[in-house]
Image (cartoon, rainbow, N blue to C red; front, top):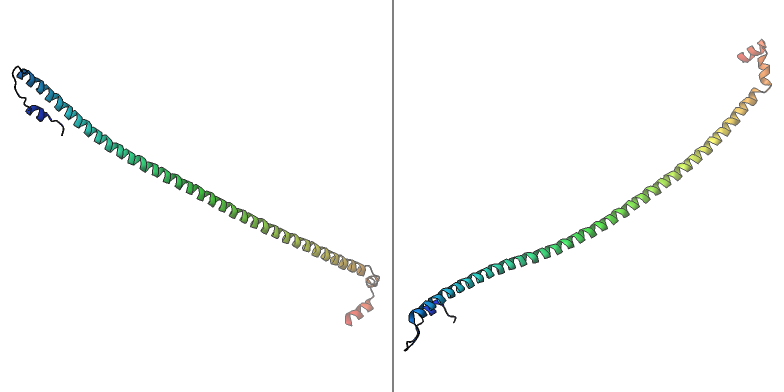
Length: 165
């Protein structure tokens, strides 16, 4: 068990002949008691400070550990978000490419259909034109025949006959 200031204060020495000066020994012991008490107080304060610092150190260690875990979780979450965003972007691009291909294919199909319709209309116009030309030529041929000339000379009796009959 460690020595206390009270132990020093209560210590009594046996007396002998030609011993030390009692007042001088008592003064020295009083000084030792004061210094020892100061050392004990200082030691106690240092222990209290050490405990407080140890608590702070533990607290900051816990904070550091929590922050490290949080940073790791945040990095993992960021990686996951980045990967999900890449996947979603790839899906959007694929969907856009499919839509673009579909639109292009639809446009090509419509373009071919319209081209076929234009060709068909050109053929029909050509046929119509040929038929119309034939009709006009036939009408011109009828107009150029001699039978029209006989109608030009006024024969009243023939005309009346035609009108009556």
